[in-house]
Amino acid sequence: MNHPWWQRRVYGISQPTRRRTRWLQGLPAFLVLFASLAIGDEAAKSPVGKPYVNGEDPFVAIEDLNRQAETWAVCAAAYSLAAELLDGQEGGSARSEELNNMGNGAKLAIPMTLLGALTENRSSDDPALAKKFSSIWSYGKVAMKEWPEVQRTAILADLERAQDDEDAVSQWLANLMSTVAVCMKNAESQQMYIDLWRSLATSGIFEPPTD
Image (tube, one colour):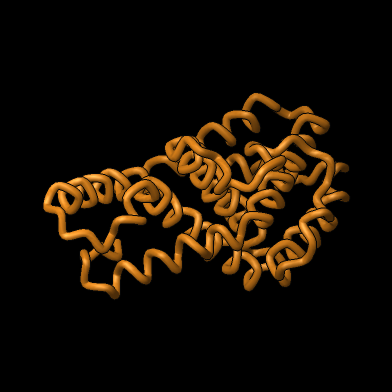
């Protein structure tokens, strides 16, 4: 398999020999952790790392909706990276798919968060409200696609700065795992946004595109 540069760095593979460095011995533990997270075990099992999101309070407690939406974008990026690390590993494909599904849910939470200020009045037939609703949804669709990519780039930039420092790469991995753990703790809130989207999509109030 031709791994992308960041996976080669995490796996300790150097091309063309694909030689693995000694610290890769710790990788099975990381895979086991992600496996446990993917099937819903306690997020408290996460390693010591500094997550890319604030884990002290629930995401829905973030009053600034733009900041909350950005947090979901970080989760989408973290889920995606974790899924890619698991994909292709023995016993990891199913859990990789689960993480990808969580990532898709986190992406959907972005526009639904931005719509949060309007959803309480979604039964209103006020044309101005409907127009604003449509405008925010259009913006949210763009954010749903672009914001996770921005966060993914930022997370991978940290790995790139680690160069070939094994300790730094290990710390990056711990930070990524801790981020996934925090995001998992907020899975119920993410599901709330997914359910809200389904409710709006089937209500006939508006027709959100599925792309």
